[in-house]
Image (cartoon, rainbow, N blue to C red; front, top):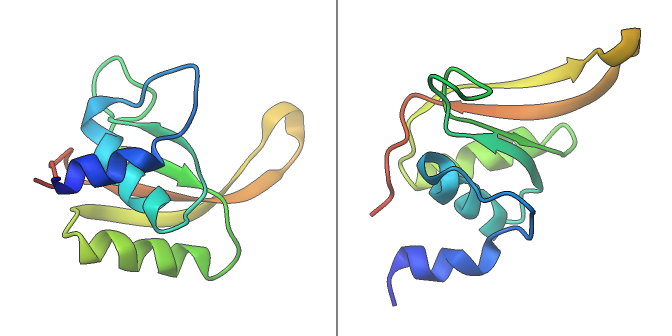
Length: 106
């Protein structure tokens, strides 16, 4: 069994498939217990210009997620904690991991 097959058990049950270019990174994070809630492979026609994963967690969740993706050698561009402002109301914060490319893990 290969690494990708092992990670597939952590695929979220959603009504939309994960973008192929961010799927492995999402599965890596979820396999480590990181609660992802939004992702996009980025690029033209996508929600984000760069591959991005949003996840929940407290102050240390970002450090943990960063350590996980670095162990897998994923190309992190930046990590940030952000708030949304829908309808003039502050919500969040949540974490965002942004990657340089959609490099596969194989």
